[in-house]
Image 1: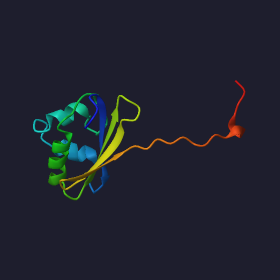
Image 2: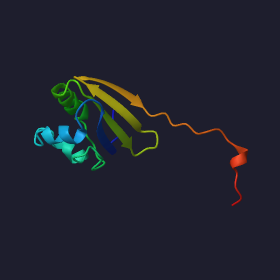
Image 3: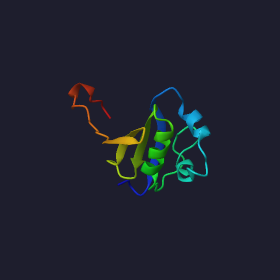
Image 4: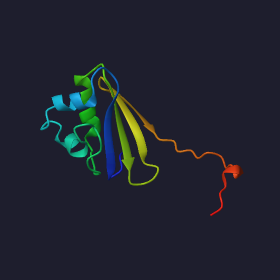
Length: 111
């Protein structure tokens, strides 16, 4: 499901509370794995496994049913980038799509 070593970042996609406020209201013991992977502002803390992320995010999203959470993952391999959105116990995951702009000969520079 998720790469063995992944950086996780958690944010509020939409809602009336900041991620900092929400994280400060959570029981750090109950969500110990989450707090090992992210900082108090939702930024990545450690790249490691986090097998319970869906279970934790389901519980947190049910605690804040009007908030849409965005969990972003960046794995070790280049194409392991994704976002998962959570709202009131529901989720939707999307993989990143990497695109390159078309070749433009006018942008060639002498090296």
